[in-house]
Length: 274
Image 1: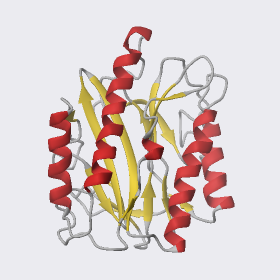
Image 2: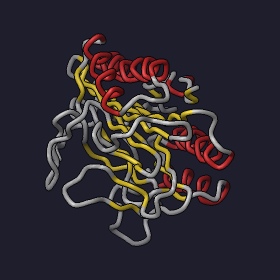
Image 3: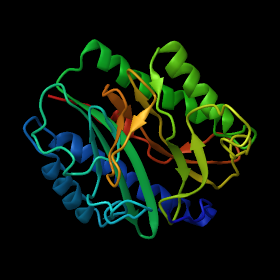
Image 4: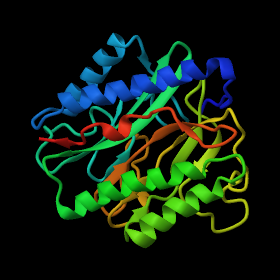
């Protein structure tokens, strides 16, 4: 995985914000475009056209990590039990009522990355799925205020895991988490969503964020289990038991005081596709 710096100079904050807002605008347009009967390939093609209109390019398309082929799509499109890294070809049937679509969009805009995900329900969600979605949205709202220079990253994991697994009775997905970013898609630190069980499991747990650091935080939550499954040589990561999952992600700038959400406005995007 390519690594880089997650630090931004004060003179570049506006550029980083603009990249994040390109992601938000893409989600706004995607929300209005989505409808029952579309295929993931059609959704991905719409994302590609939107990024071109916004003078961005996908930083996912062609992305490479060891033991996997280059990522083939412009967005990660993950349906139902697929938690993350779904491709435009990972589900070939048309989308239908009851589907839960996670749309993760990463862009490069004038040298800076924006990277954020949101979850969309096709039709009114069932009470169980609604609880899952509301839990995901609230947990990220609760977690972001912990991202301060005087607070270790561990507090983020404690806060969201306690809410998801304690208050909501749902399952935080294991083994996945957020990351630093900047001019590259991935950079230190790694931001786990789970409190580590032993020393060394999460080296950044007791690290305090430095002002000027850009991080993408992204809780992933499932109804039945926090365990995952993934076929060898394939991108999509699924819940091990086939239960429904959600994915929410914001870009955050660490400041001397309160964190600044660069993907502000994403929370207001319509997430019920009727």
